[in-house]
Image (cartoon, rainbow, N blue to C red):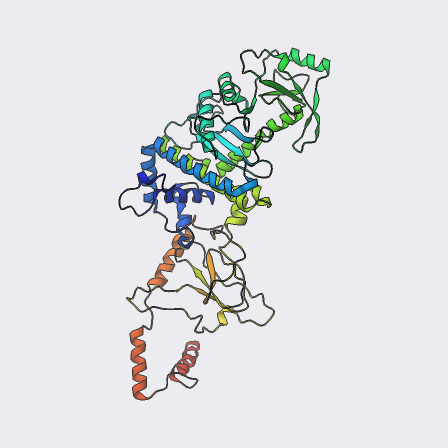
Length: 548
């Protein structure tokens, strides 16, 4: 990403544009929905490094939007390169592993509505009587065991048509370019399956798909006079049982082929039309093409082999695309926060990158775990809020919370040992646990604000790293350490201000005063250390006077 966006980096700039775009995508992946939510990453510099300020982020988005076409092309090239590496690392779990005509790579195309709650450029009324935008997206399906990832997205006005063939073709061309191994000018072939709803059932779109030699499964509109042909199917008893989502026979659902009953002369050669009838759920409104109280739907495909029930089930699984859209809306697509249309185009590309990062994480790290199918809400609650590491040693450890950490301060966990371990408040500081206080004016770092954990205690610390004084402790779990109440609330401002106050507070006893006290004690022959020394007597007398 840094290489792709290098031309937009200004001379002497501190922050790299590629790093800023990636940080924005990570902020959306962990729950952000606007540019300012990058503060969630800025609060953890030990995990995410240096994160740009809000004005810097805003200026970069404006800069990319000013040259939107070139910037989006650069972002797409970086995404394609990253996808090739991820799919290669995924091995047999990659969507294109073992791709063939019988098991093709599946691309789902669908559109959705995004409501605009304020006046934005090119926002328009939608066909559902709303107001906003009508983006068109293409997703690579990971199958039943996974989720999916966006390949391309086109932001459109709210009144954009649903069955616009030119826009479907443009989105699919961009999607093909994202696939590993794709070469410009080469047709994808039968190892690719394109699925779409009835909006893709146009002559121009299906003819283009046939020219690309890909398989397709697209919703097909039936003529109003098709009731007569349905009677022929009933009389000839050509209906076959349909399958449910598990591949078992579904009671009351049937499929049949209607290719020979329709005039398909103007449609691409080799196209088949398969219809399905099923009793609609109670209360559903019947349409004019429905027959004998059954809901009748149809789809077109050019796949020549396979049982009708299998082909119909394959097409019906296109509904997983709705899950992918829901995930995208939970990752920043629910609202386009910027005003200019090109700015929101850049935002849509960042949303796609955020969804991809999450899908790649699941594909690489959770191949045999239910988390492979978790949606963003569950991922954030059960995974992204895990602290960076948990301590499993009995040695004294310190909670090294970042001064910029916006969450509540960490507290030592309760003791889990069976012996009589002392309470954290009763632990006497030793040479290995005493806080270091640098001399004034030296600029040395201070560890004020650390919490000492006594031996025999263990537990979770949110938003911090636990470490030994001598060596790094072994870690049982890994996470982003953001917590459920990280960075998105005003508590972060208060916590950062308190940390700065502690760090800037001058020490009560500096090195110069300590040297002076030691020299005077040696001159007058006064013993400072030891059980009967002056310091021991003072440490006993001060609490007694304070209590009195």
